[in-house]
Image (cartoon, rainbow, N blue to C red; front, side, top):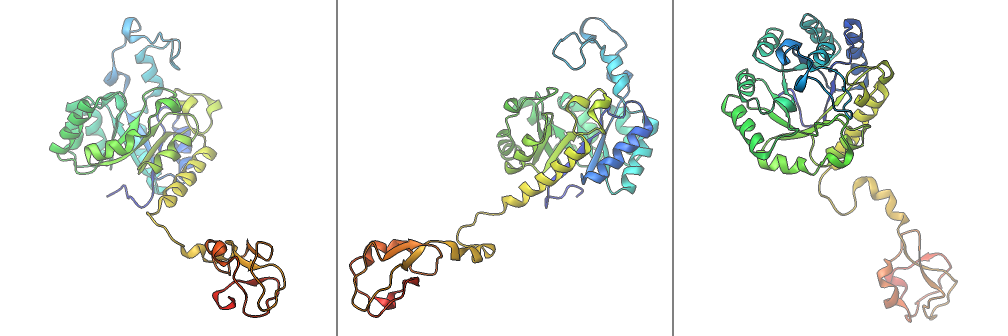
Amino acid sequence: MLIKEDKPFIIAEMSGNHNQSLERAMKIVEAAAETGVDAIKLQTYTPDTMTIDKDTDEFFIADKDSLWQGESLYNLYKKAYTPWEWQEKIFRHAEELGLICFSTPFDDTSVDFLEGIGCPIYKIASFENIDLPLIRKVAKTGKPIIASTGMASVAELDEMVRTAKENGCEDLTLLKCTSSYPATPEGTNLRTIPHMKELFNCKVGLSDHTLGIGAAVASIALGSTVVEKHFTLSRADGGVDSAFSLEPEEMKLLVRECNTAYQALGEVRYNTQAQEQKSLQFRRSLYIVEDMKKGDVLTKKNLRSIRPGLGLPPKYYERLLGKKVNKDIVKGTAVSWDII
């Protein structure tokens, strides 16, 4: 199994942030390796496998709130796609640096191509999670599948999961995803993650398009074992996905804090832990706070609950008031039953 569950599996998504430069793509791989992520992911398509070359009607992005307003779908994919002749070079370079490199296919030809260069994992994008023929094709490779769930209904996800499993997928991870760019924290709905894990009986995670790392780190507490985040060398350099991508120092922080969150989950445990033993002395306990003679009575003036914690617990305070001491006691003596 490539994705182990002894720590979060963190994926840096290159997407189109190479800005059509192989040199920049290689630098993104190198920067990703330095951040401590487990994997870097590409996307495998061409403009012609995604759409047709038309810049009117539904093939043109007119939405003023879109990062890509004013682009045709064809030209957007032309800017964003990773040339196929680069991909094996990127795969091998990542492997040399200790990273798992894999990709998102978008049609049959891309699956065949990726099989030819030894893609070890397949990612299904949110927009393709209803493409059951594609799911079937990928599942038949026998490779692990990580699938984003953006926009999908429970019924659609059930179809996808059944299709994957019935066609040979034995290692499936579903990623909670909000297909908005960028996504808002309030629209992320992380509580879906444990529900999805129980509903579909599979591993779960988060494909995160929010700004920053807060949502990703929080997802660990809800059961995420995989976190995917877009990655760039610098947002200032521009690019189709740069606005919601992390820079190297931010990705380092994401890796560190996700691992910290995972370690902090621990197990259900009460009582004193080994690392707390030295702290027991700083609990409150009962002490004699004035010099006393044999036969003197314990009062609120000479008996107090203070730190450190070497005397009887404070719960015995009322019970001891009015009792007499059986010997002379100096101020600062921890109360024990043998002085009563």
